[in-house]
Every structure is written in structure tokens, then in C-alpha cells.
Amino acid sequence: MSDFTEESNEFTLSLKDADPETLKSILEIHWDRICSRLKIEVGEVEYRTWLQQITLGGIEEDELTLYLPTRFLRDWVRSQYNSKLNQLWNSELSQIRRVELALTIPSANSEDSPTKTEVTQENHIASPSNRANKDSTQPIQERSVPITDNKEDEGSKLPLQTQLDPRFTFDNFIVGKPNEFAYACSRRVAERPSSPGFNPLFLYGGVGLGKTHLMHAIGFELAQAGNISVSYMSAEKFMYRFIASIRSQSTIEFKEELRSVDVLMIDDLQFLIGKDNTQEEFFHTFNALIDAGRQIIVSADKSPSDLSGLEDRLRTRLGCGMVADIHATTYELRISILEAKAASAKVVISPKVLEFLAHKITTNVRELEGALNRLIAHANLFGRPITLEATQEVLHDILKSHERRVTIEEIQRKVSEHCNIRQTDMTSARRARAVARPRQIAMYLAKQLTSRSLPEIGRKFGNRDHTTVMHAISRISELIEKDSAFAEDVELLRRMLES
Image (cartoon, rainbow, N blue to C red; front, side, top):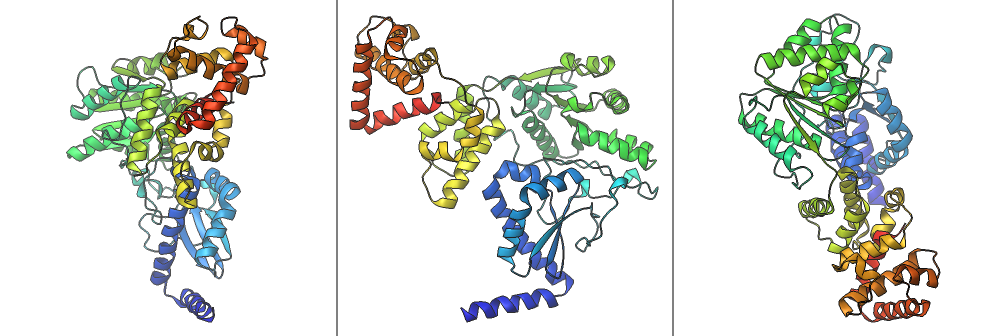
């Protein structure tokens, strides 16, 4: 115990007496470890959304400073993760008693860690970028240049370099019926940009269906080809850059730089609705690039004709190229996505668990992937197998949001699909075992999951007597006790239906 105390004291002294470069290296090593733990504890999606943009600051006595680029991000991280960050840093370095979350945009060319100087926030226009791909200890150049009212901070210093996420490629995009057309169009543009009929390419669909993935995949493919300049940004980022160039009186430089790229990609165009001046600038940029034979790729949550609030001249131009929609995922596509993600994470997960997730989380692929990440992290942290029971326990908050009231008709439909029989067989007089057993399962689940009485359940199954329902419940209960595989099958059905 004394040896451990001596080592800790020596390390504390080394922090106190270390030169700036050594101190920076020590903090970066521990920050990398803390980031790895955060990814596991909060999940990859949540980490990328809220915590990835934190940059490491300096240490003063027992207080460490971490920086965030916007007031919104700082306030959110402070309210949701402040205690977690304090706990993790204190466990890594006992000398650190307090973590301060500050607001600044450090210079990308600075060789030293940012100082603890508070920046006047009224002089900054900033917005979070949820898709920035950066090192956990080094601010990326695209968002690291301070923007003030000082004319010396020229808009030309706001580089339009591409921020592409290398994880989003065509190779790991799971193709199914809902997205095959959008995928094919994206492939075509990546192979032959500015092809007639494919410029602009407009991708639209609901949240979390793969629009951003396809845009990054196109950009990554084109960037790999070489000699092609690609600029990807959200509509919010476009607006931010435009306003910044106005404030720094460098709009000409901004226009020239933006219109010099070979491929311009604007994500989530719907955020320009109501921003008339920004829409006008985008309109002129759009025309300039199209006239020069450059490729434009745009995404939104609705088709151009449905984006009310956009200027008519802009909507008509967006719709004159290739418009490709991405539909809501099917059960088969969700299963494929889950299997691919589990394989890439090198984790073996029971098909029953994957089927359960695919049935329960149907609207958003990001939420589906986030749920799987939480299960994997929970299993790794606690060394427990990923069972149906564990899945329901770990994901109770997500599953609760998908709660709905189960009806006998829904039970009949779900059991019929699962057992590969017609739903009309549930109410027919057929007594073949292939039909009778699923019917008994449906009666059993109707009693378990609804408040209907036995006579009411019997009437829903072809006006059968309540004693028939009693026999079905008794028979299924016996089989569940004797046959573990059968019990697991019924349990899967119950969990898929359970509210």
C-alpha cells in the first residue's frame, strides 16, 4: 500500500514540475483513455454527438480545462456529463479535483494547449457539427479558426476542407429495397460526377435512414480518386460560414473559395427554410457550380416539391436533376443491418435477440445501431451474455418509447407470420397440428398480454368455447416447461408484442 502511495506522489510531483510539452503529453495519454471509456459507457452515437468535439486544455493547480466550440454544446455537456468527466479524470489523475468546461475556438496552428482565457461569446458564431471526424486531443482546422468582428480575421481563413467520416463508405452501406435506388444513384455519381440527368443529385428521406451515409460514401470515393476537390457541410454550417464572411467583410473570398470546388455536398437542406439571405447565396452558388459543370449533391427530409419555405426558383432547380428517396426500413433490412454491425464489432449475438430488436425498433437506423452498441457495451463491461432478458433490461428506455397496446388481432397476425400460416387459419375449423399449435400459442399470448376474458378470446378465434382456450393455455404452459427451444420461441413472440 505504501509503494502505491509513493508512486502516486511521484506522479503528482511530475505533473507539477513537468515542462509544458511533457505535461501536454501526459494529459493527452490520459484523455485518450478517458475517451475510450466514454465511448463504451455512453455509446458510440452519443459520444460522437456530444463529446467528440471536446478539446483538451491545460491544468492549473488541481483544475483541468476542457473546451467546446459552442455555448449550446458546453451547456449541454456541463448539465449531462460534468460529473462523469470529473469522476473519470479524478480516477485517472488524483491530482485533478475539478474539470472546468470552457467555451473557446482555439487556433488550429497553435502548438501549445489552449490557455484558460475565456472568449467573449458575443463575437462568435458557432454551431455543433455532429459528424466531425477528429482526434480526441487536437482541434480540427475546419472549426478551429476564431471568428470575430476584427477585419484581420479574414473569411478566407475559413477553409472548406472536407470533413468526411471514413466509416461511412459504400462497402458498409447495407442495401435493401427501401434504399436500393438511392444507393444506385449515389454509386453512379461517385463513378461519373456531373453526368447528365444526375446533377444535382437530391437524396431525401426520414431521419436516420442513410442519407448522410451515402453522401459521405460519395465524397470518400471521389476523394480517393484524386484530383477532385470535395466539400461536404451541413446547411447549418453553410449558413454559419456565410454569416461569418459577412461579419469579417470577406464575402468575395467566401464565394470564390466555395465555387472553386469540383463537388459540393449540402446535408439537411431543410434547415435553410426561413433563412432568405442564405437561400439566395446558395441559389447563386448552385447556379455558378452547375454552369461550370461541377457536381452538387443535396439531402433533405422531404422532396424538393414538398419543402415549403424554400424559394420556388431554388426548389425547381433542385428537382431538375435526379431525385432519389429512401423509404422506411423493412424488417429484412433491419436484420441485415444488425447482423453487419454485430459482425463488424466481432460479437456473436443470438438471432432471437436480433429479431427482437428488428421488430421493436422500426423507424430509425441510428436508434437501432445505438441500441445494439449499448447491448455490446453492457456485455463487455459486466461480462454477461446478451440474452432476451438482458436486452429488455438494458434497453428499457428505448423500448418504452415504442410501447403500444396489443390487440388479439395483432397477436394473431404476428404469430401467423412467425409460424408461416395464413391469418385466416386462426379462426378456421382446421385441426392440423401445423395450424392448431400456432393457434394455441396465439390464445396463450392473448391471455398473457391482454385483459380479455376467456370467452372473449374464444370468440376472437372463430367463436370457440372458453374451455378450448383454457386447454390451449394449459398445453402451451406444459410445452414451455418441457421444451426450452419452444419456450424461447414463445418468449420471443411475447417480447415483440409486449407493450
